[in-house]
Image (cartoon, rainbow, N blue to C red; front, side, top):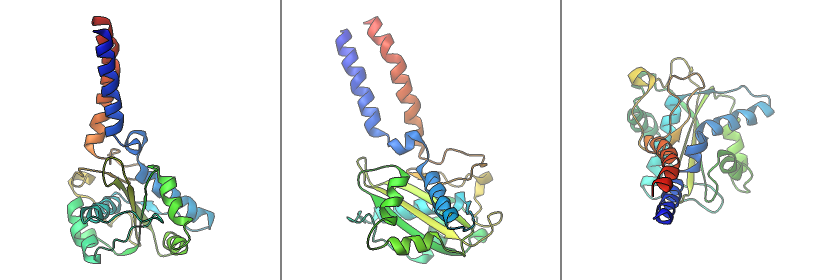
Length: 230
């Protein structure tokens, strides 16, 4: 019986590890994307961009829109998806609970993907080092008109590919893309979006992934007890 429970516990552990994205367990890859963007700008002596949770949530909606219509990940890690500008400022903002009077100009957007890797660095570098669109991607990231940035990160299904999106704006970080409900916005059911370091809500990945992590630890704690009991 002990061997049965040991095998059962191992099976449950593997199942949990498969069900939860590594990006969601180890941190927020959307915040990592913002950090990489600012590192790229700093290297070229450009101003640091403020992180906007409102823009980040809208970037996640951008990804969801593209995934929803079946857009795939191309061989050069690009995504051929161009939703109308009105969707960004009207549909995505509303879905995120962004206060509509605070919606400002979008000065740049960048979308990419990665088939195997889930970390933000690999995803972004894959586009920046590509042969066809790397120059255009760098130009977007290094735009002098940008003052703030938001990032979204998600995957189409359990085994990928991983998609990411960056939205840039020239608006004031203190008065644009503000979230309703005491800054929390509308709950997002899947994926991750960037939030400032000093925000009151640090969890911006899906609640399903967040709930799975404590469950994983519960299984690990329970397994030795079951082995002893049986």
